[in-house]
Image (cartoon, rainbow, N blue to C red; front, side, top):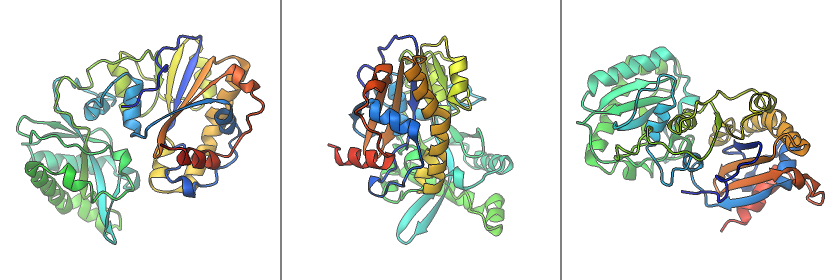
Length: 367
């Protein structure tokens, strides 16, 4: 798992780290032309860049909280939900509702952002699964799109080593399933789960209405080590986390922090965090548009981020209100960290470049 050296040792008056997955388009050769982003372009031009090998945004986030290896992601994400139970000593899976469809010879996965699952639909499907598969454990819907399975002792013991949902949404998963479902017991349960979902009245009604049925679950976040759960503390020195992402919130809680909901803008954060030395802000707005190659939605989200976050924070660093700003970007061709301090703005010879040109250069420079 990647660690950025020096990231955990800072003790200045105010440090803000922005975690922004998919800020760089997954395919740099066809990178969409970005909107005017003067704040972001200034930060990237003036900042000092460190890069590390590519990894999932979940793994990068866990590394930021000091986990040397991938912990139990399902337990941690469950720990970050509003109704979080104690997770220690229990084995959890994320059992997220998805739609699988064949496009030519490719099996494409659509996650809940494309399904519009109501609370009533989620509750009805989860109740049916609990009634039909008690030997697996207890299914629970934290909301329409985030489901969990609290595994029973009678569940298959083999570990399900599936990628996080964010890594497969909108992508071809057919080549992954044979490895993920290599264990015969899990393979048979997976088929049975799909059969039960297909036959449920909720999905019959969705199909009749012309909506995509919820015809499968993506089971991920497994870990057989009961000690490696969301209650295992790891602390990288953060003093505040701002995020609506349940995995980030679970990591914060396991580190003894009380996570805060993401504010509308950097101005609100600066007003509330003036006495906090180290704040981590998770900006996930670009993930879904990038997953589904929605360039227009990605551009709109990027423009909002520049106006609400990058430009105000660039001004705050230049004015000395923020001593150090970090921008951490997991991407398909590397994990990147830009560090910006006030003296960096005197590097007038560093000219701004478009985000597309930055992405192309970074992809070409990959090792």
